[in-house]
Image (cartoon, rainbow, N blue to C red; front, side, top):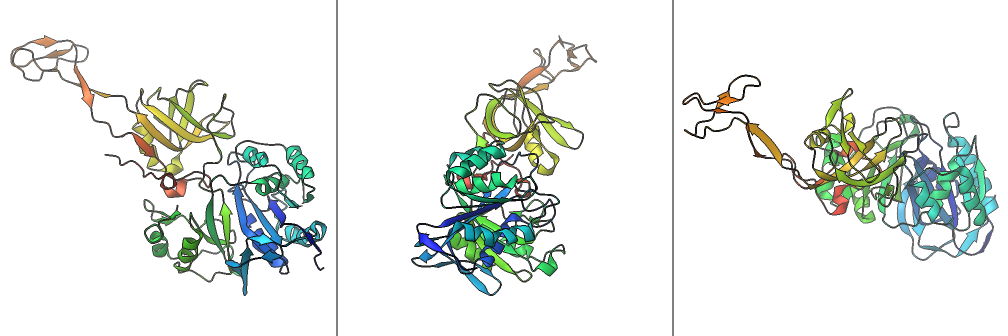
Length: 444
């Protein structure tokens, strides 16, 4: 089928919910859509848009994809390679392809790659993006499919869905994203005959990325000696490098020795932006993510499973905060909090158990650490000794007695500043301290 054109801008194609918890990847679908439309040009960069990470029915990263296609105008730039074909992008489109024809070309791609036993795919083709508030809601709360469909009707969108078609929500949200902050990711993919087998990627090369390319982030977990850019599922991705500079990502990609790369593609993304965090709120509703400031109310306690919990005051009432076992040494930082500390916590509020899952926290002020010790003798200056449980203290030299211990300020293990989990425990959307111009506060 040949594509008809009309005067106008690029045409938007978006999709979501095509993968399962163990197989496929929605970003791989973006490469297949590009491959299925060789007579159309990519306009701008493909988008990888992460949505509310607290959605109960998400598969893995809750990411939707969006590409814009048309008849490119201006100078092309390389943004990927699929097989033997270079993928280039243009800044603008001179003509707009026919939406119905493009939808008919994209439908078989969705059907071919969607894991319909575990997903509810949705495909959107529209001449202009839905209103931006759709993304703002989808990244921070749970919205109904009817809301997304209504927003798509406003922009004369064509849609196609499988099963319940819940993927239309993510597809519409990805199409409506207007970046306030943005990052980039170069994603590489494996040959299909290697899917499910162990990946071959040089850990040494990955460990050098932060030093060689400072604009990249979340590359390597030095505590575990594990590359964070390499997934551990059977999905098609070989590795993905994230950063703030597309040019650095090209070079970073070239620096990695690995098994053969079947294809690669550069995406613009909302990853690492904290777009999901609600800072202005009146109540704390589960399945959303918040920034909350308050005072530590109780000493942190370790519960079965190795999770560390403490209570925090908030304007909505006491709130239990949790550092879960996968965050490893981050839990020791949480254990160092004491009642009276003032902190700002950032994370997802779970429904059951009702805890705020910490993504990072800031110590604003520290309560004095009070240390109990044996009192000095007021007569001879020697430290008294315990006279027995509940019997106070007595000086062994002169026999002077005292009822109470000496209480003095002790040294704290924490300092005011920001703290975050190790690289492998960070969420896709969570903004790393590196992108905030900060470093993790050193613990003494």
